[in-house]
Image 1: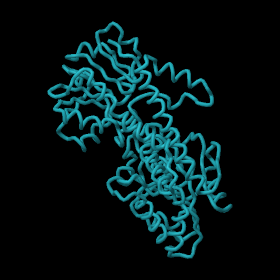
Image 2 (image 1 turned 120 degrees about the horizontal axis):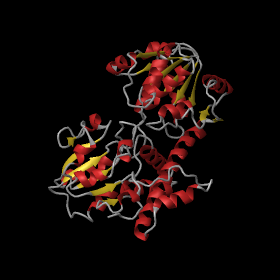
Image 3 (image 1 turned 60 degrees about the horizontal axis):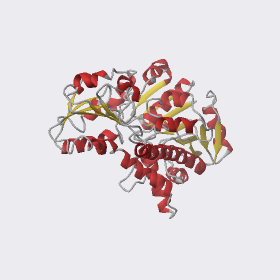
Image 4 (image 1 turned 180 degrees about the horizontal axis):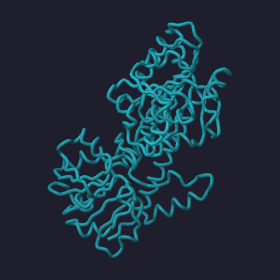
Length: 432
């Protein structure tokens, strides 16, 4: 099929490349000419394991352009994968989606299905179809379908090619048939429903996972007070098939482009309809507080961080991505700097993006050893493999005072026993 994809971020680009891999002719549209030129060379503009290799394998079926009119003109299916960032009040900003819908309305010259891949509030697809049909320049049939994504940064390619399910929201048999043809070479379970239910599946799924994370983090904080071990508790819970072991890893909160935005958006919608979701509200509040957990722990060892050398390991919100959106480091580092500490930070991927926020205030290190050298305390914000596999003796050998605050439980407690290192993690006893 001839398919166009609007937007080449995590959602749009991964979707476009995956559809090309399935045998479709795909044209990816972006407003950034430099970005388009980069992709034409087979270079991914985002760091995502496996994506660039998949691009190379399917370049004969991939076209990249800024010319939306030619891309949409005769496409059988048009996917919309542009951003829906949160507004200050927590609601979703739909301006980019609306802009693409208006461009499609002025460009299409054949019957087509417009597929909203972007995460949008419930009822948005109905409004977008009305907007589209009212603005059409040609006498053609169009229908809007909902096809929410469930990918995660760092595993986006796998999540798309081997999805746990493919959710399709349509209002006609014709649109249903076209969407099933799009995905005929994908061999995952299908959930075919109406548009509003498809929209809700996306929010309900992400917000449930956020709830699960916030819940286990609250249990972890209580474990510290009561002398229990959160990892043993989570293991014991996970064996129950009704609960499952995924998303029960305690830490300093969730980040990224989905969970924070989607929890706030659903909370905003529920308030708008005067049906506040108290559980979602609690998940947001717990997560905001959890991000500061290491700062609070540091007070046990220093009244203030003023004048100290602070090592920071990990800047991105999770490993295997350069994404900084809602990363705990962005909450903690301003506090550490304000207190007058000197920060030496290491991250294998995220430094380039972090320099956009702090170009000169932080010393960026090429190695973990360099960051730890003569440090008075160490904060671990991201569970990079390089950190998890390092020799913990380095903390003792390199740091001025070996105090390690681990927000991701990268190490076992046994690794620190009788080492002389103070190791303070999440939901576990402090090892000295």
